[in-house]
Amino acid sequence: MILFPFRYVWWLVSSVRRAIGRPPEFVVFVLEENLPALPDPPRPFWQRFVSRPRLSVKELGERFDAIGRDVRIKGVVLHLRSAGMPMATLQDLRELVTRLRKSGKRVVAWAPFYTTGPYYLACACDEILLMPTGMVQPLGFASTGVFLADGLARFGVGADFIQISPYKTAADPLAKPKMTPEFREQVTWLLDSQHGELVSAIAESRRLDEAGARDLIDGSPYGDDVAVEKHAADRVVGEEELPSLLGGRIGTWEQAAGKMRGPAPSLQRGKYVALMRIEGTIIDGRSGRLPVQPPIDIPLVGEDRAGDLSVVQLARQVAADKRAAAVVLYVNSRGGSSTASEAMRLALNVVAARKPVVVVMGAVAGSGGYYVATPGSWIIARPSTLTGSIGVLTGKIVTGAMWQKLLFNRETIAFGDHVLLENDERPFSEEERAIVRADINRIYRAFLELVASARKMTSDEVDAIGQGKVWTGRQALERKLVDQLGGLEDGILKARALAGLPEKAPIREARGPKRLIPPLAEPVPSVNGWFGYMLESLKALANAPALAVMEYWP
Image (cartoon, rainbow, N blue to C red; front, side, top):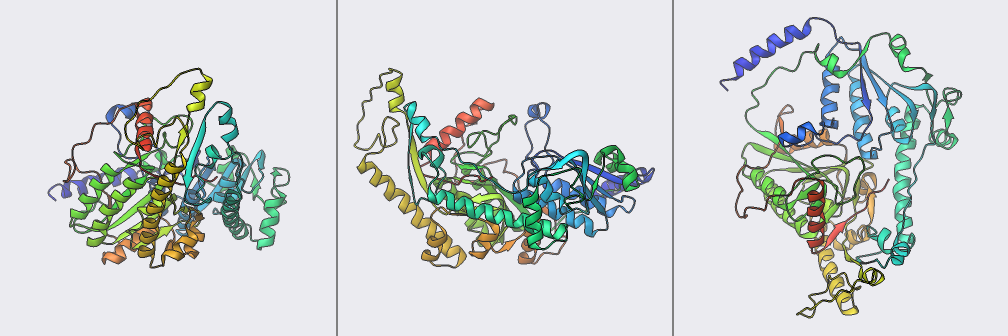
């Protein structure tokens, strides 16, 4: 409070300085990698020298809003590369583009070539520009499954997994020799939904009916010689020609920001909306992420981790904070440990008993990721969010035959009839299989009852859309698993409304408490480095009593 006058004076001085000179008429943003929805959490000091912070969707939105407020800037150029973004992230970006255009700014897309994702985003812009010699590549969606069971068997390795139904297919690539009918059916309805989103976007952008949009997709690819004629692009133009075409100088965000006035400082006292996040594989333990991002994705063990020790502490802190009048819980997780999911849910239930909790789903929120969303009084998802997967599976990798092939002799001495149930020497016996089946049935029944209570449905209704089936956000809305299609901003607006807060009430991300909030013992410090991180992840997944993991779909 005492520092506020100094902050305000500094803002005035800074604004005068920034007003001298002019920003570029157009600001270019190069989108060349997948954007996280929220800024990366603060990293240890040493890690800041070996990795750069990623631009998030939230930060890009703030930059677009600043551009929208500056009357001197005419618009934005999106330089698009094939970044492999999920459809839900692309829908976040399309919403930002639409909001910027509504502020009166011109937004053009330019690319040396367009694949399906960038083209889908480009369809939200005023114009689609293509580089000479470039191409609109074949548009549409495809998914390829690789099934390793027969190949692993040649090395003496197998996978013995028990699933609640054939639709819980996360382990199929390891355990099956080929695509099952249920796997094929599920991929088909997911891709059909995603394809429908693309058709709608193209129809709106290119001013076509549905049949015309499908013809444009099926007629691709289009080279630069026919792209304009076929109505797939508006112009063919080199990047160096863009300033004369647009009628203004093009500069980077850094060049523009140095000439733009920032928003006036605010006291930001009183009630606010707390932002929490659950991102990555749900594990028993502490949250974490690789200290340095590897050049390739490492499935499961290389992903971000959402640990119950961390999330529960954060939930207790938010529940006790009387100034946090509402909570937006951002979930981007394909699931994980059932016990960690339950620990998070119970802690979030305490939060929900004291203040409204609005859940916003990211690119994926399935299995355990849906489980932790059930305390929410309102659930929001993007049309292409992957969610549902209400189901359970568990199992083990069997390596006994591999050791025999290597002529390694393993001998085990054990006491206890079932102590070797999880041993990798052999598959489950019939007795053990019955034990495991009973366990996943128990967890599944609890999952059904939990969702039924949260969504005001019967267990039979949930079972019909459960059994491990994965749905897009639009399909989930039709099946009452979510309440609204939208993104983070929609969640913030809903949380303010439910808490009776004004439209401008601030939102602040909750960080973990400096001191542990009982009841909880001091956890063991985590191991640093890539190898240590992956070892921790493997150990956490191996120790989970049951896994509720859904697979990613392209």
